[in-house]
Amino acid sequence: MSDQRRGSERSREISAIKKQGRNRRGRGVPLPGLWACRTAAGLTQRELAMLVGTSQGTITSLEHMSRGAYPKTLRRLCAALKVEPVDLLCAEAAEDLH
Image 1 (cartoon, rainbow, N blue to C red):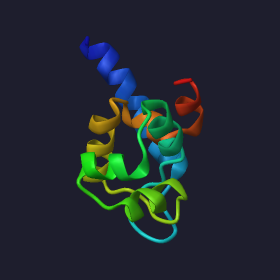
Image 2: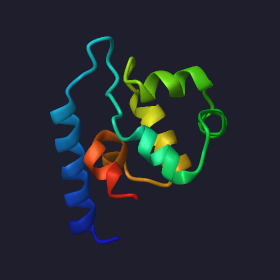
Image 3: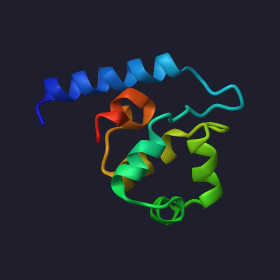
Image 4: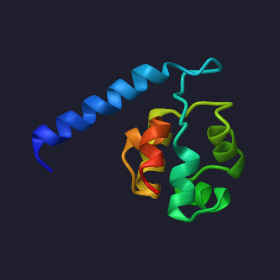
């Protein structure tokens, strides 16, 4: 991937994070695209939790946006789902996966 393309994707990710703001209940960022990305990957909450190294309850809370994800969790989710952060941060981007 070219540096210019990487830079523009990074800018989109930063813009998405800024639009989302911080979660009211903590420092993490909400992931409105998580459910769509997980469903498109054909994974259950339990399967994703095992891949990421967390609990099913955490995945449930992230999908319902009752808690936000920390950067480390966001990176692990992206790796497990084979998506970019913007796909998890923006519901619109996740809809494009279908």
